[in-house]
Image 1 (cartoon, helix red, strand yellow):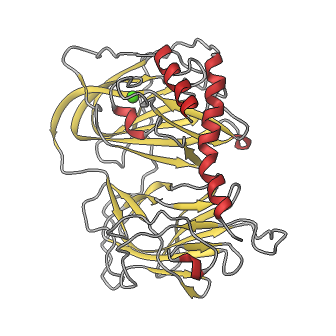
Image 2 (cartoon, helix red, strand yellow; image 1 turned 90 degrees about the vertical axis):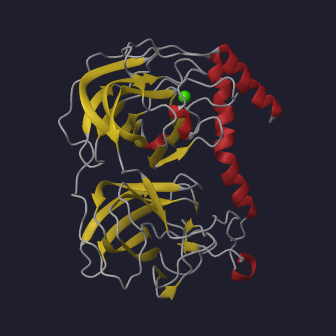
Length: 420
Ligand SMILES: [Ca+2]
């Protein structure tokens, strides 16, 4: 591992430092240091500390003083093609008049890690989004600057829609960004924020699940194993609207097809649904592409393939991990078939202030936010387009191996520990 780390550091030193230039003297990078929340639809985070979401707003292509801060990156299954739907949301923390965005490519491996197609949206309320920039799938060298008519915004969404097709290993395409900078001036303070509401008050229990209750000691929610149902149903009540459901701790095998469905608790009306293919272990968020109003709901997580493995159990499984301080049955009901299960750790992403999970017996609040498809505004054409200079880098080849090892390492360790 030291040798691999050496390669990383060498590459970092070789290909370094893109420093930005503000759009105008009066404007500053208002995204600098601001919190980033990512939603990997069908994707997996690059499994190493080199590619963390917060490196998207640390102000530089890569932080060489930190050694490892290469940017934000993730992968999606190669067999699904280069199209992807991955978003990073930035909360600017106040309302700013913004007029320029700068996308800084990741630079530790020229060409290979330049971002593919993306779109940038801004919003004042997290419901109505205006597209201010977009770019094609070609790898983009150098900073891409987008100037647009000044608009008041607190939230920024960077949505990646394709990989550049260069950065890959046997299983995954990878995509990454060195930095996203938003320039503007402050208009006013805001009491809104991107919130994460949890159905637990303690810490995630990260020990991997075992196959029997005796060995368990760690309550988890299983879907699709040797026994039980292929569907887990989670009934909950909220006083806030939410736009994504996050499972911060989860295990699932490669290729497991899952359907997520949110229905109203009282009349089974489908409010939102989404299909994904699991790519391996790791937490993940489901972005339903709309804001779901406060209310009482049933979340169904179902494996849609009941194929059996040679040993007789279901071929696919999905596990939702546990945490300490779980809310009890007054707040959340968990059923797997007819069995009452332990609660899985669930988080709601919201821009509302509220209590989050409330007792099932409480009267649900009326909708506080309209249903809005993100990015449906006509948007503003970008004033400039990035230049395209495709390149190849031999150093990238070594890094592909490193990333593949890191990404798959956790899954391999887990599988070895499992007893089916
Ligand atoms: Ca950065």
